[in-house]
Length: 440
Picture 1 (cartoon, rainbow, N blue to C red):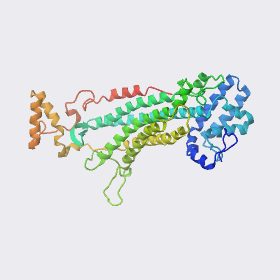
Picture 2 (cartoon, rainbow, N blue to C red):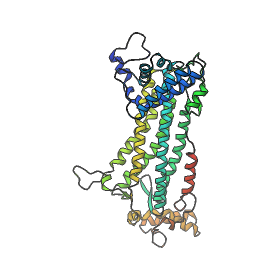
Picture 3 (cartoon, rainbow, N blue to C red):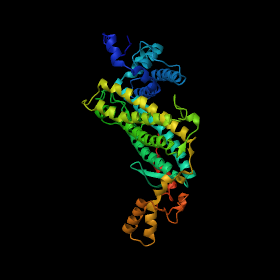
Picture 4 (tube, rainbow, N blue to C red):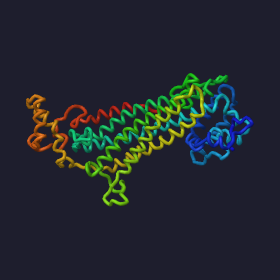
């Protein structure tokens, strides 16, 4: 039976405890250092308002620092008899310091304690995602510049449509990441508010200095209303899930492109054999398993926002044990997010581009719009040029211009911002710089 700090004489049965605790002990390990950080700020504040002596503060701080070192060294664990991370930290202090250790909980509840832990944890997680997004953005921009002259068929409705380029393809996903960065910033702002001092959701009769703990913990602001602080449980997780879901959507579509482009029917891109997988029966296969797993995992990441919404949608304000399940939903998705970003960068470092795609005659009609526009620029009304080119296509007599299709993006008359001939790579970099101009 787990040891709890809030026992009032009767323990839950083992079957009830197993059901209600679930995976919480495992997931709590990710919050360990943040629990200690929150406690260190809290006791400094308690000393400042006279609830701890200077000597007690010194001893408690030393004890918490020792626990933090154990966490950082990988030597910290939850004992089998201890319910959660909060209990473990307080019990370690009590064993070392006696009655003094029991004083660290004055003026707070496990509710605002876990809220602090989660918000500090999510802030760090968002910053890690931000760094990986910026790394991927740089890779995409470099590839876009490197292959900006290489033409690539564009598709609509799954049909050959108009000429694109690898520069435009890579650049599109780079700019999408800039949009995703705005979402990450919004989620960070939601998490960057201090709930400590809201206690169980209705404040405390102790004269807590919440401005002090906000400053000590590095929060940009506090959640002022104590009920609002408790309402942020679920709301904060949903904001983070929405933000990483936006990144996941970008990666999902890119992965889907790669699966299609790797197919021999397209043959636009390839990867070294060791980055693909074979078939147990077909010796010619080079399967895009990495991109398929990426696509599937990104769908799982995107599902987190909706699962969190469903979990939190029918509870009145105040704390409910259902909130514990939020960690089960979000924490694994954050791990997937890191892995997907890391693997995307790894794969792109090894991508191979087919620079001779358009020599295949299936792309002969890729330049019909170019031919229509060429005739319009020469003086033919658009409707007449469109009809004439359409008839030539139907008769099988269509040829672009003099008959020679363009070989490079620069040979096309695309000059406006964001077109094949003007990718605005620098402008997109400026956009990302603005979107990512926020720090802890």
